[in-house]
Image (tube, rainbow, N blue to C red):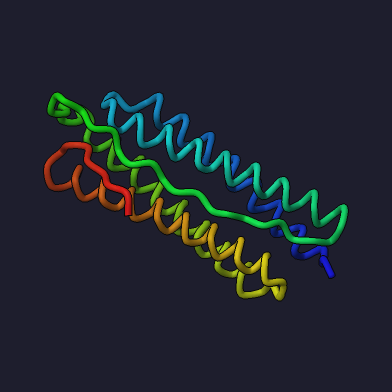
Length: 160
């Protein structure tokens, strides 16, 4: 049985994914470093993907009361640049962007983990757990970028 609380939670999660995608797209436009821009473009696209899947889930629950199968998605590897990337000219601004992104990913990870714990349906539990794991991976990537910027002033990130 689909509860209004679950549907409300899905709508909130969709809005959070939309905000995250737009926020990351905006960050990509504000960063000068090509590696940094690529990271935030990829994050924006990933959150759009989550939004699409949550929209499909919402529709399925409304129409049939059934959870959808969610396969998950891998984060792409960072691009390899032949030329050593330049230091970020505005390290303070970049650190602020990464910090906000890490906080957002942490909140989303916890929200999906909470939904997984509250969902009795196996496919629903699996989907929310995978979404939580993907948000944790985004946090991991951003954390690597944060430490790289903090230690060297250069953009570096890796996929988990």
